[in-house]
Length: 256
Image (tube, rainbow, N blue to C red; front, side, top):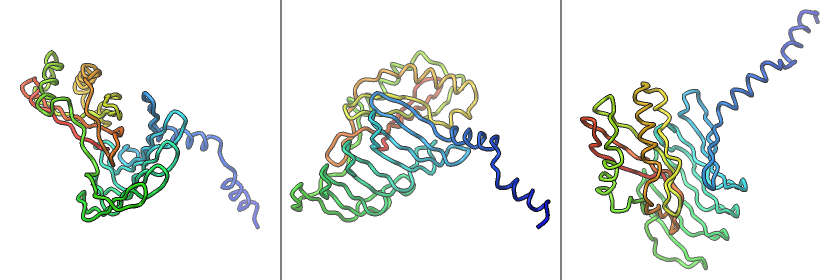
């Protein structure tokens, strides 16, 4: 075997410390950690555009509470398996999402691991299902989820936006954007922020969206999401549309 060949093989097998440093830096940039009142959110991006992502939530004791997969995190589109756990580590529920809709089997369990609900969904619509008591007796199924509501409903929400944001003047008189926040199980909204796509928008839009976030940071208490008979923490998406420099309309929706 020639000395040249041995030299080439050695160069391939010996790791370059600079390469390891660059790899570690890239991996660090792919993971984003956000801390909230009593939770820690860990976002792992799987592409350079920060669209494909895995989101895990932990409590302060580092117990994993949920894991979600997104094919477009910037727009909040879940795709793939989602699981949630009780604080004791027992699986609470599991299902698959297809383009942000439950698709396929859905299973939920009581805190002791007993089966509570099994259903089959097709593109967000339940086709069949069974529900059980803690003792295993068949019972009628209640709606899986009840959406979050602003106190007084949609009309009051728009009135609130107009009163809070009336002093702001966007440079572009017609302006639409979406905010993301977390709604706690007791109805407190926190972590209000723009979606990642806003980072690519013009400076004027980024400055204005920051002013909106600052003006809405202390919203009144909401009616929280009820999922599988329990109030749960949820991701809230808020859409706001300005026309002629004023709030024209607004809406909200949940990713439970």
